[in-house]
Image 1 (cartoon, rainbow, N blue to C red):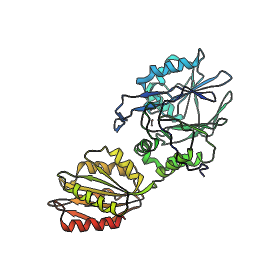
Image 2: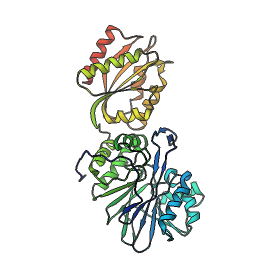
Image 3: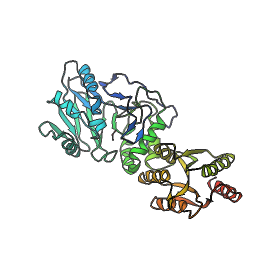
Image 4: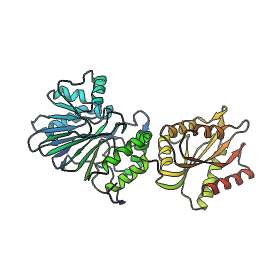
Length: 401
Ligand code: FEO
């Protein structure tokens, strides 16, 4: 189904040249000032909003997606520079989230004769955002439609819930280029050199982790065609070793662990619960297990959620707090559940000097997740780590190993 070789060479983010070849041009922008993407995901290396131009030998020109409205002027200047006095014929909008659609209004003020090409639902959203659905100069497209423009044949494929319901992607048949919208995107500006996998995983799990089945539907369609190049709306253009990225996407979308290992996520207040998880990590390490420790009070949950999806096993360790679980643990589990966390083995450590409830609460919070193997061996601290707790920790390590 996925006719690509699994190779290990990885692309990293770096400036994208303007002339991409085959009549395509890069006209996207880098946001090096943003600190929280979508108001919640820390992006220490900023964000890229990619946009592309296709110039046909016939003289016709199409623009693919816009950029965040705060970068509209920079983007419009790039368009003007590459138009070289010509006018755009089409503005193709794959996705209406404002990081890509925010500058439609500014664009249409400058180029009002352009035909906007998008899905029926996207035009409803345009009316919501811009007060017009461009009914006098629009083209509604659906699955299987082809827009012919000079040497280009743009084939449209619906991709609902990757990431919003109106999304579609475009496959240019002759050059075998996939305009993948949010698919295959990542956090990080294209000005910064960083590996693709980690920030793409955190982006994918955070943003479309809930919609794995929809992503699998799109991957099945993509598996039937030859793809030479992927033009995402975030992050670098992908041209080599596409099998690597597709293999990761299949794992993420099917909730399959990438590798065997134990993530220990803990909420500790005075350090006793932290003592216990460090003892567990040490024991697992001696058994040859890969272990990743995350202090939920100090690490943004998006990093921990990404690792929980990366590895095969998870240990949740929390103090009891106000008859409940500690707030950072509660928030973390909520992030997991809302992203359909499944197909993993989970162990527990609880602490509570009186009326301990953390383990029960954590188990209850996970009760609707599918195919979780909840380990019955647990570690029950009542303050500091006792000799009995050390034995419990060893038993838990045995269950995880
Ligand atoms: Fe990058 Fe769903 O927008």
